[in-house]
Length: 563
Image (cartoon, rainbow, N blue to C red; front, side, top):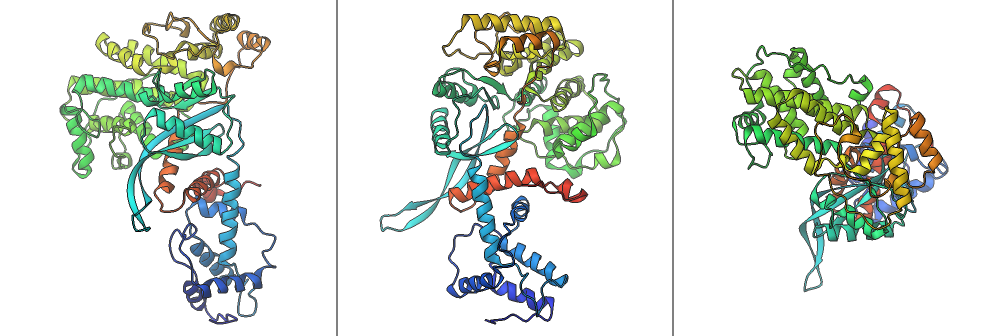
């Protein structure tokens, strides 16, 4: 080993780096021991350069490395190569050379700092969602050794307001009882206070929303108070489309969730063999005067699959299917991704030469109910708008579809229309542009405050949903049992002011897409063969880094937020 590196060319420098730096792509989490000579070389180099970077914590660099999953070794090689090319380091000046150990330590300190930021929090909102993942566990053997065994575990991700990632935990059994117990253990371990929790966000599975043994109910029993149910409205809209498609094309026995009728079979064939899809025909435009006008910034913030649905829906309405769009790849079919199913339905319509009445009806429903409802939520995503969006689903169904389709929609809403519960309806009424609706909401809230019901209420979707309702106050005859939990702590005068002048809003959303993004983040780190704390630290670091650094910011200015 050379005591003083003399680099004549960039290749000499690179070979020196490769000799000592690990090349594993995830070496920032690699727990394998390094040889003594390499460790001594790191320490020797750090001592030489300790003065140059002594007061630099490389906070933004650490965030960038985590944001784009760049290993420590790659980072050191790239940065030092840049410094060498700029002549900041050469054969006579080694002070500015970045050390692998410095990057490693700063990155760990940054993750530790970010991990501490999710502790000692007091939550008013908690969002959660889960996914089964295959991980490796170390189990002891009879001879005192350990073996690695693959296991399937439920991984529950959690978020709170301002898109803050709270981490994840695992559950071995995956039922509501064990998940709730593991959740409470995790929150207590991190000293996260949920005693003042007002609202919970999740999807509409029975595991979460069961009125007696669901996760939300167990959460309410744990903190001994009622909470507002913010069950994802996009999930409700998917269920509505699913029920209508099953009604028109038969039930499903396939993992992709598609029915077994002629429409589902053609869509499945197109998804499996996209190169063999028929050419686009001269299709008739779909009449939809209520298609929402969406700002470019909102479209820009959509995922690729969502933008695809938006663009194809517009093409169906305008009667023009561009060459670029018709050759674009549609996402995978899945029973959990009806966004892509809706896109395939519209694409199939524009390529079909033998249209059936059922396909035409399904295409009209996909655009006028599902796509319009989805865009309504993207345009107005605040929790207070959730009841109005659900009311619009019923209004559009009445306007464009016969009674048999209306009955299917009504049945789907009876199972999944959580925003039609009286507590959510009153919140929507208080935010209504109609002053009479706001006054009605105020009077009902004040009556519930006078009654002062303190026991746990059972949260059930109304069974007498009025699909002909013109206003939120006409949706159900159910009485308001308790004050909406999201309004707890707001004085009577403020409620009266909102009722008279409007302007009521809350810092929560009517969908759970941010939690779904957290699930994807958890999935990317949970299957790595590293300790749990390392997984959690990496996930939190990536989440925070994404808020600071985006691909768009790099393309434009690469501006980093100040600490």
